[in-house]
Image (cartoon, rainbow, N blue to C red):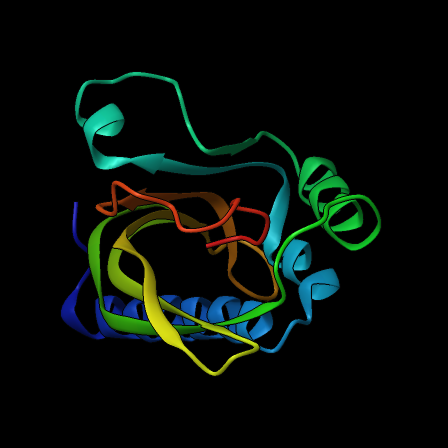
Length: 162
């Protein structure tokens, strides 16, 4: 169900800003702030398009709580060893798919560029975000975020959020 046009436009703006902040936190390596934009019992999944379309549960990343998101960042900072790199997200327009009460479903195309220390930039990952956004609080928060990626080859281990 879609909301009235003015309400829908406001929800689209909120969802667009939430996704822009999401990407900014990752790109600026402010990962400790990243989980704060998810509800406590959230779902965060990064999954190939093939597995998503076949309803297969096998995902590159799967977290089912904000605590798991925090653990992922702690692990990234303290335990994982990976080549130094930076991300830069390019986001397409956010489209509101439906609004039911205080829950908006949205979809946004994305591309993530990766730059290594040698200055070489490549397309690291591309796909679409499928989001459920909780609008009931003071600010919008992700109830679920699924990054469905088209890229079949992952250049380095996927340690950062997409």
